[in-house]
Amino acid sequence: MVKLRLKRCGRKQQAVYRIVAIDVRSRREGRDLRKVGFYDPIKNQTCLNVPAILYFLEKGAQPTRTVYDILRKAEFFKDKEKTLI
Image (cartoon, rainbow, N blue to C red; front, side, top):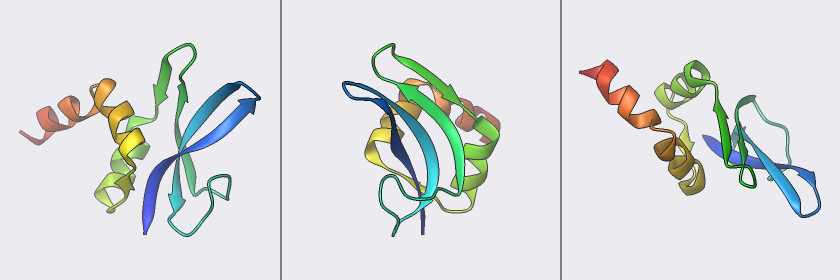
C-alpha cells in the first residue's frame, strides 16, 4: 500500500519536509516512489505537484493525517470537488 507522507529534510531546529509517495513498510527517511510536494512550517510555504498527487490518490494512496491537513489548507480538495462535478 502506498501513502502520501512527510519526509524530513533540513538542519537541526530548521526542519523542512518533502511530501512523498512512499510504501507503507518503508521508514520515514526511506526510499520514496516520487516527490509530490514540499512543506516549510517555519516560513509556512507549501508547493504541490497537483497532477502527481491526483495520480497517486486515484491509484488508492492514502494521505497521512498531517499531509491531509496540509492539502486541505492549500484548498486541494475544493479544486478536486469542482472537477468532479
